Length: 545
Image (cartoon, rainbow, N blue to C red):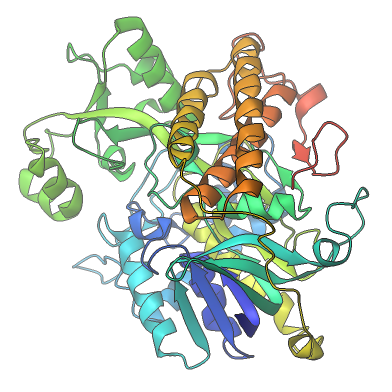
C-alpha cells in the first residue's frame, strides 16, 4: 500500500507533534509511531522545561550554564538561539492548554531548580510535565483534519534517491534526497511505502541500548539508525548521559527520580547515612549530571553496595506529597515512603547528546530530511546536556524546521504524483528462530552496560567493538534471510547505534563531559575540542545495508 502526504513525521513526542501542528497549516501530515501515539519519551519526562522567566534570571545566565555543562563542545550560536526563543514557546504551550504550576500568591510560574542551573528556571507541571505537554499536543493534533496518526507503524528505511536508483553503490558523500520511508505496518505484517515531500525524524533517544535505562521501551535509537544508513552524518555519539537517580528496586522498571528532588533539597548519601557529594564538586548535589553520576559510580565501586540513597525526608511531608505526587505514589507502591525513607537510587542511561547532525533549521545533509529532538545533534548540548534543556530544544527546533519547510511548500508538489517502487522482500521467509533476536538483544545491552558505561577504558571499548561487530554480522545475515518484524527492526537499529557509540568513544582520547576515560583523565582542547562526526561513507566504516 502507498500512503501519500506532504509531510511525513516519524515519532509522536513533543518534537513530532509540535512540527505536525505547524505543518498542518500547509498540507497533509502523516505521523507514524511504532506503538501507540502516547508511547513517547516526552510522556515520561518528569522535571520540566528550562526557560528564562524569573525576574533574577537572564539569557546570559542560561547560556552560561548551558555552555558550562556542555564542557567546551556546545555551539554557542545554537545555545543563544534556543535560550532566547524559549520563553515565547513556553507561553505558546500555555495557550494550547498546558497547565504549568503557578505560585498561588502571584500567579506567575512556579520555577524549580535542577543541577547545573544557577537560577530557578524550570517550568513544570509538578512531576508529570512531559505527560501534561504530550496530552495537550495530542489532543490538538487529533482535532486537525490534516493530521493522520499511524500507530503500530515503524520505519524500516528511508526512501532516498540513492536507494531507489543506485541501491548500495553510493561511495561518495554527494547530497542525497529523501522522499519518505518504507514503513512496517505491524497490524498486518506488511511494509508500505510512505511518500512525502518532506520527512522529519523525531524518534527520540537510544537508552534501550543499555541494560539499565530510565527510557521507555520504544527508545531504541531507530531514527538515528535509519538516518545513518541513509547517509546522514552523526556526531558525538560517545556522549551518553546517565541520569544519576533511577529508582533501585527489583520490581521497578525504568522509573526516574527527577532531578527536581535534588533541586528541592534532596541529598545523596551512602548506606551508612553519610552525605558524599561535597567531596566531588562545590555545587554538591546540584552539580551537573555527569559529575553526580560518576560520583555515585565511584561510591558504589568503593563500597560494593548495590545502590546509594537520595534523602529528602527533612522537607515537609505534605509539601513532598503535593510537589511530587507521581514519585510519592510510585515509591509508596514499592514500600518506600519518601517523606520518611531515603530513596534507593542508581545511575541509568538517560539521554543521548549525540545524534543526526542538524543545522539551525534542523536540516540534515540529506535534502528534504530533517531531524528534531533527541534524535538530532544540533550542538546545543555539547558533551553533556544541562537538565531540562531537552524539551526546550525540541520546541525550538520544531519551530525552526517548520519555518524552513514552510518557505519551500510550493516546491516539488508533483512528487506525490510519481510512482515509487514497493518494498521487495526478495527470498525472505518467516523465521522459526526468534531466539536469535532475543539473545542478541540481551547481549548488546549487557555489553554496552559493562564496557561502554559511565567509566570507559580502551581495553573495554575494543572488547565491546569485537562483540558488537560479530552481532552485527549475524543480524545482517538474519535480516536478509527472514521477513522483517518489529523486534528484528529494533534489534538491527540497536546494533547500529551501539556500533556508533563504541566507534565514537574509541576516537575521543580524552575525558570530557559524559565521556570519561581514566587513561586520559584530562580534557584536551588542543586535540579534541571538536565534534566527533561519523558518516556511512567514512573509510573506517563498513557499508551498512
